[in-house]
Length: 409
Image (tube, rainbow, N blue to C red; front, side):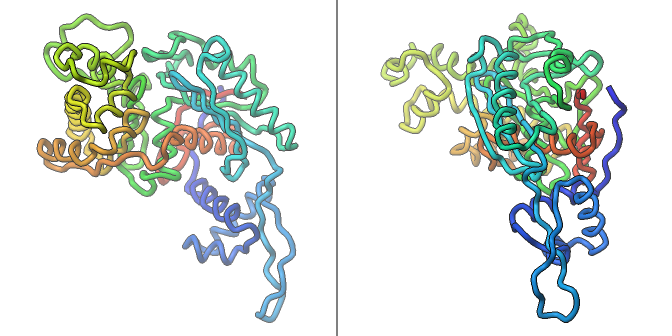
């Protein structure tokens, strides 16, 4: 693994300039500087670097009402290359092919076990998107992958959560054998935070937390613009929060953390099933297998069992947020994942319960990126890898993401 290096603030502005050029078609250095509030010198340096990399191209400008030589036009070079980004979740694999400006060209979604096991599905998804890139004559420059698991910082092995079947799987080593382009791997919550820092609610917010509630539970904590990883890449693993003494002394349920046993998608379905006898008239008793999706749907119809389960869930989520707020004091908490986004009707209730228990309550919001936060974060990580040739220890200095991602050529 090659040494990691620091990326400068120039990297942030490169993304902004690329977004601007892609969105405006043909533009000029002066327009970029004026609209992005960047100095002419900074824009000139960025454009020079992007021209050298072939990401943008320069052409003669059109006539100008101002005497003298018309300014040259800058255009995005869409044929320069692509990024394959993957959000490999517990139930589905969401992949995208993006150009080097971050625009998504192709998407694919398939069950995580569609090829027999998660790794085979991962490879088939990468292969499919790479084939699309070849068909467009836009070679793949890098692959970026988000997984719902910790990565051992020494071995690169996946230390999986309860819903991924690759505990101890040598993911980085296998990808080195099977891919012929640079790749990066990171925890899905960390990439979700990166997606929000780039194009979501975390943009220009130096202190925030993104909590992903789905098949499992995880979080990413950003303090003073820096992603907190911890000694073992385990910072933000809030699924293991213990909320009461009873949980502290219960036998460990496999790899599932204490909070995951209460507030994950599967836990919501189990809790509703356990309470069925107390609510014989609940519509959930006629729905066959009870899932979190069923519970949320029944709650909208004021089903008493569903409302009772969600009231407990709201308490558990509020307690998790209180633990985070009491420890790291973020300005913003973003709820992500299928369960997190489904809590949108109850966000005011969660906010009140948190505000009643902490001296400086944060803003609590539902993800504005829908199900795309991890995918967008993967695209951003892949773009930086393609440009730098290696994964920097800080992806965006203004956000300070200490990526520390396992990667290879």
